Image 1 (cartoon, rainbow, N blue to C red):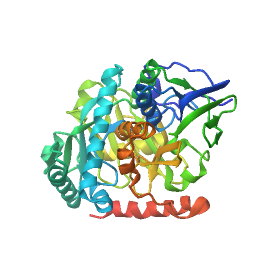
Image 2 (cartoon, rainbow, N blue to C red):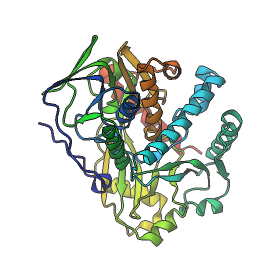
Image 3 (tube, rainbow, N blue to C red):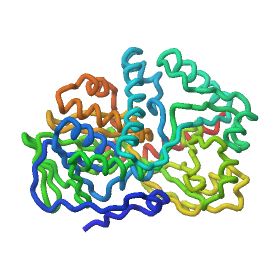
Length: 428
C-alpha cells in the first residue's frame, strides 16, 4: 500500500481541508473515468458533471499530491511558448483565438473560486522583473503586441530602477512589466476546493487508487490494484506523474523538477517592504527565480530546475543562496522549509491536448502555467466528449514534437541543453 500523505511543504501545513477519500475496492461504472485528481482532472470532472455525465476520478495518492499542490501558485497570462511562436505555427487569427481561450481560463478560475467558495487567497497582480536592456525590450515588445494583436491592455512597462524599487525592494532589477490581469493563489487549497466542488456535483473521487492498466475499447476499462472502472470515455490527466501507463505519451513530455523554499513569518511590516503591492514576481531568465508573499507574511521563493530528476543537494541552503541574491537584506533569515516536484514540460512549451483512441483523451505539458490553463483544458476536453470539438481541434493543431535522445538519452541531452541556457542567462 502506498503512502497517500502529501509531501512536507508550507502548502500542506496550511491545507484547509485535509480530508481522506476512500480507495476504490470494487468494480464500478461511469460515463467518464478521469485519471488524476489535480487541476486538469478536477476541472474536466466539473465540466462533465455540469453536462450531466457521471464521473469517477482515480488518484494514485491524494487530491493535489502532484504539481497541482506543489507549484508556485502563479496565475499567468497566455502560454509559456510566447504568442509569436503560436502565430507562426497557426497564423494570427488562430493565435488570437488561443489567447482568448487562455483568458477564458482565468475566468474559469475566478468563477470556480466564487462558485465553490474556495478559500485560496486569490490575489491579482504579477510582475515580470528585468535586469538587462534586452529584457526590457522584450517587455516593451510584449506590451505592444498584447494590446495591438490580442486586445490585452493590462500590461504596464516599468522602465527605471527607482520605479521598480517601489514594486520589489531588490537591487537586482532595473525594469519590468506589471501584468494587472495575472496573479497568485494558494495552489493546494485551490485544488482541494475544486475537489469539494466536484463532489458537490456528484463526482466520485477515489484516493490511493493508482490506475495500473487501461484496457482500450468500447467501453474502456481502467484498472487499479483493487478495483476497476468501466466507462464510455476516459481522460488521462496525470501529466508529469502519469508514468508509463500510456507509453505513447512519454516522448512529448519531460518531467522537470522545480523547487520552492519558505522563510519563517517575517512580520507584516518587513514582508510588505519586500513586495509593497503583493505582486507575484518572476524574472525573465530561462532558469528563472520566482517569489511572492504568503498569507502569513512569509516569503515563498522558487527557482532551480532539474532535468536530471535528482533533487539538488542541501535544498534549503541552495534556495537561501538564491534568495539572498535577490534580497540581501534577508541575510538574517533562514529557509524554514523547502520542497519540490515535477512539472510537465512540452518541447514547444504549449499544452498538449489529444486522444489516443476515439474514447481515450489526454491533456499534459502545461509547462509551468497550469494553474490557469488547466481550467480551459478541462472545459475543452468536456466539450469534445460531448461532441463539440471545435475548440479542442484548435488546441490539437498546436505542434508537439518528441524530446531528442529516446528513453535512455533524452535526460542527459536535456541536462547539456540546460547548461547552454544557463550560459545564455549570463549574457547581457
